[in-house]
Length: 248
Image (tube, rainbow, N blue to C red; front, side, top):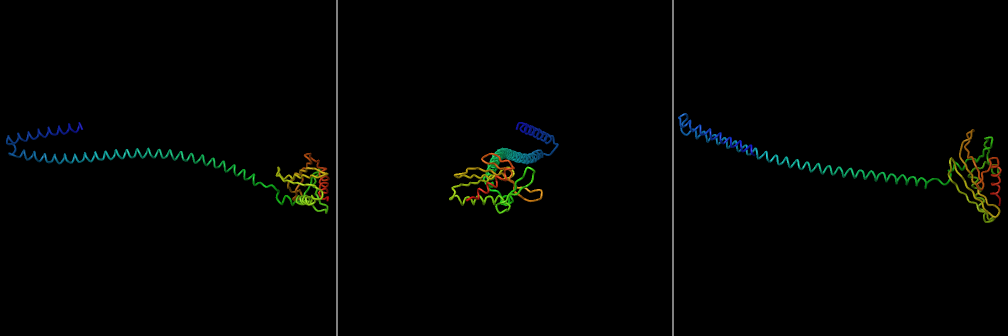
């Protein structure tokens, strides 16, 4: 404003000096009488028009500056709001990631528990139906047969156990069996208790294919009351066990 006021004052002094010079020219007869006044009025009209345009221009410029300042303030507020929103979204994403990781952990634990809960408690039919074999010290596979000379399978052996259960009322003998998955196969725990006998047999079995290509179930180990039985005696003891189960 100081610079603008100085310019207007300077302009007014210049105009006053110019008008005075025209007056002197008119008095000296350089121009006709009244011509200086007409020229001054014309100049003033032009100046008033120019000043009006300048005033309008300054007003428009001021309005644009105010609008620009308002837009800048709105942009600043919008940027601040956007930055705050981004921070909130980042916090929400971090919370969701933590929740997702926790949920994955719970799902993993649940699936592991489900896998344990739904693990088979009984060997597959193929494991039970294959011929039951023993292996001698020389590495030969020896089949186990029933009293009829037929190849005995684990399923047939279980039927012998079930047959004993039907005679419980007569001999007061109790037979309990339990399957458990073990490394590479299945373990059958067989408990027999009665007035004259109280034994616990553990038979470890695994499915395999013989060098001749026969699919069999091998009795790999046998324990009686927790003591391992030498392989050479397993066949004899198994037969004794089979015969005792078939006794009335």
